[in-house]
Image (cartoon, rainbow, N blue to C red; front, side, top):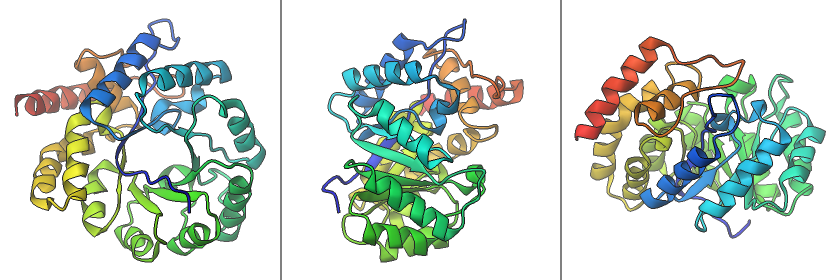
Length: 295
């Protein structure tokens, strides 16, 4: 098992866009600066929340350059997965050497691979790189769930598969992974609203959407839970819970970008096929931000 242990709060960074549709590099740099200042433990560029399928190769490299220069030593867990083994390797080849500390690799989507197919895919990806790999299980987006058995099989057999980002929403499945995981293998919540429950069961942290807007609060929640201060972590969970849920009233990252615009941090523009936030979403976010900022 690799010596790297990802824990605490990692922010799945949004990608800000300008009015003309380009990358807002200044807003991206400022976003990362706020994450670092707030005590976030690691950063996750080029993942789902970053609208990576809508980014060109040159845009990915530009975002990585900014991330490296502003991360202040925070590990960079970088999304590279696809539904094609060759495309995943192409993404690795593009980004390797540009500040990547570890790879976030999603369970292949659309193809609906069997458990054996998932196992063989991740073994092959792990063999193709010397960097640590974090499995990303998000069946609501991929159409294929990785079971606890397959996860543990990979964790035991592949030294550089170091963690799983678990966004199945299946508490029993996550509990089984935590129970059986080898030493040094991290379990990270992929759902903000499940983080407290998972960490109370033994998970190591979260890859968070909500921390784009409230990094200090989400980071503190994970740090309190990790230290065994469950009363303090629970209080923060309850305080943040309505915002956690609101981040998914429409497809991520539409709601959290709406929140960031309300907070004056960037425009809320998203790229097609996503559409701008509805007025209903904006109203929800406006109310919740007002409540959270008053507390």
